[in-house]
Length: 293
Image 1 (cartoon, one colour):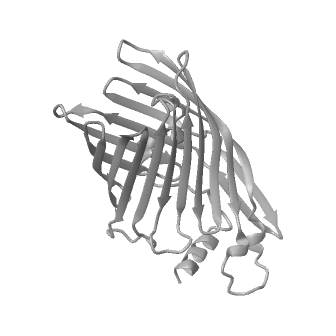
Image 2: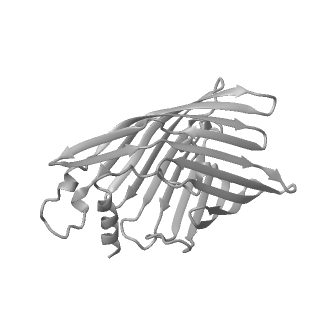
């Protein structure tokens, strides 16, 4: 029944639709390069993996993952590689991109990083996996097709000793696709996403730091997304925090740092049933990172 509900939702938008939104991660601070190329090199050389499993208990529910690699800064410049995939039922959307960041010194403790992202955005739709009520041909499905589009994004990051503020558009190409089959027209658009991020490190004492952060996302034809997380860090070894978002989710997360150059994190989001959203369930998220330097 839950799988059939996903099929009904998917088919309802088969005629005229916008491409799905980019996934939001609870560990967005560990995935900044996926949304802002200016972050490349600002955290040293590392490789990180992130996995997010949403709508627990619902088959073929959203699953998202990222792979991020950043080089160290050399001559004020750094490179990075980002890969993300977001699978929902029969649709799988992803991004493969390279990032370049350049540092400009503002003052003794503050730097401005400017970044550019270039790569590909792909989308695969496997209509053969749809649960069909009848075997008769459906003209609405003939217009659905896989595609690959180029992407170009830009970003900026102002980073001080204890704060950061960033703004970015990871893909500003407004790609639109149109296809007509047997008189049935199908259109889809990849709309640009705008991101704003900010964070601060406030020392409490010699052992504890308070680390609030916020992520704000704007995309056309969809509600704006605001996520705020407050964390406490003990001696740069362990962080624990709580988060809230304007889509009626609350979250908790914990992360262990600098364990033989590895860091591990786990997060859990709880859905508040305060709105009439059709599908709403809890979410797990895992992150692992290896710091080379």
